[in-house]
Image (cartoon, rainbow, N blue to C red):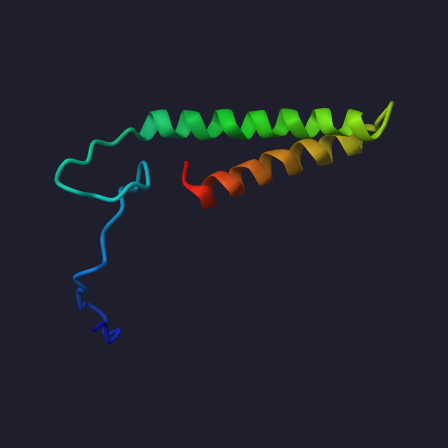
Length: 86
C-alpha cells in the first residue's frame, strides 16, 4: 500500500530510461538515438500527411491552411505515438 510519503518506495513503481522511455530492467539496452529518429520520422510523415490533406479539401489551398494542417498532422501523429507507445 502506497501512503504517499516523500522518500517512500513502492514495490510496483519502476523507473524509466530518460533517453528512450522504456522500463529500466536488468537487461535494458537503450536505443535512444534510434527511437528519437523514429519519432522524428513519424512526426515528419504526419506533417506531410497533413499537408496533403489540405489538397484533398481544397483545389488551391492558401499558405496558412497548408501550414496549419501540416502542424496539426505532425502534432496529432506525435500524440498518438506517445499514447500508443509504438
